[in-house]
Amino acid sequence: MSGLVVYFSRNGENYFGGELKNLEKGNTEVIAEYIHELTGADLFKVEPSVEYPIDYMECIDVAKKEQKQNARPEIKETLNDISSYDTIYIGFPNWWGTLPMPMFTQLEQLDFGGKTVKPFVTHEGSGFGTSKKDLKKLCAGADIKNGLSIPGVNVGDAKGTVEAWINE
Ligand SMILES: Cc1cc2nc3c(=O)[nH]c(=O)nc-3n(C[C@H](O)[C@H](O)[C@H](O)COP(=O)(O)O)c2cc1C
Figure (cartoon, protein in one colour):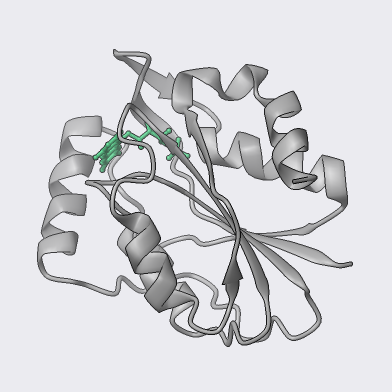
């Protein structure tokens, strides 16, 4: 069975277990790479054409505005065809309760009919928030499986948890 990980992750200043830290690799990317290592799934990173500010406070402002406007920020590269994959892992950080808006830009371009979707989120306490409701709309026609929610501070130790979830 061939898999694909479609994910968003931002490196830069972020809260990490209650403290502001500069992350060289985003938390969600760490999990995406575990999935790649464990299953051989391909990786597709959704990257906005205009990068988010490194500064955490500036970033949360920009993200909040985008969400309020229900924006579809332009992305560097768009994936259009997932027909050769059976399982799509969808990963993102919880941003203001749901997926970062560039994930909406990307996921709306894809035909999820007949696909298996396994969603995962990293967060600072809110888990999936309301994102599962959004995912249902974004992945119409997919069989959406149990999601995996990991606090950002735990990603370094999460490989076993990720493996168990993959095999559910
Ligand atoms: C713009 C923004 C909004 C966020 N909103 C939330 C939130 O509503 N709830 C939460 O638990 N964490 C929130 N966080 C924290 C991130 O979800 C968490 O740090 C995540 O692990 C970051 O993943 P990344 O490093 O892959 O980008 C927010 C972070 C940012 C930058």
